[in-house]
Length: 333
Image (cartoon, rainbow, N blue to C red):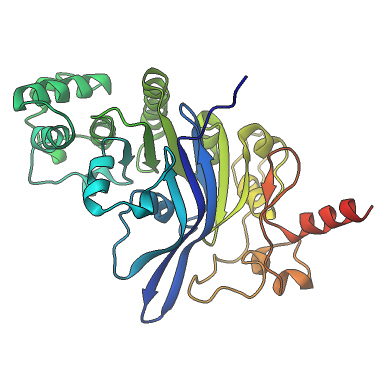
């Protein structure tokens, strides 16, 4: 059976912010691909580079001070970094769409939901205003908003947090995108609404066959919806594998730290394990491994040598000197 070709490939992406205080290496060598119908989870603490990776793909980095300094973003074989702004406007929202983190700030408070949705549809689809309005109603019904036609006249503040998030999903799906980037789509929602949103995204993905990049700090979300996972730290991928391998045998000390900090359902009252310290200042990264100052397994070499991402096991990639040493031993034997 022929393996399916990735619809999106990100190759050695580097996005830096040039500030008076120094160069911030927000994305520093990100590399992944995603196939149609697949869900890739990007996980990490705040400031690890997850959202900037997404904004780089969409070419929405504010410049100045931000700039994509190296790498490729191949969508259906074409490098988006070589496209003009006019060409990107045709791709954004139609072929690659994004659900932003906070629907209250992403939706314009002075325009009705109808105006915002219809405008999006008219930009990309060959429809008149009435057809675009009917399409907006269909989309709101699709994401489970009752009395959709009447709710079109409402403003964002007249919706609850969960309903605003559903509106954002409806807008993102307006033109049946082939890739959907969901940046923390359930962060501000309670667990019941979160489960509904995740179930809705899974259902829509199955119906539309789109690829989803799910950006989150929640490993519970990853275990529910993702096929593969990339764990990021200080702008770099530190572990990249399929979901089953990640949860069965996590390799990087940072991934282990994230998993150990998840509350466990137990009769015993156990103290949660925390990852000591704070993420590094991206303007002044340590000379060796970025995670070394917080790592319980770090040795002297970790403080001076920056590891590379290597394959350790079947399609299981990890950036850690512990595994580089193991690989060297295997090669020498």
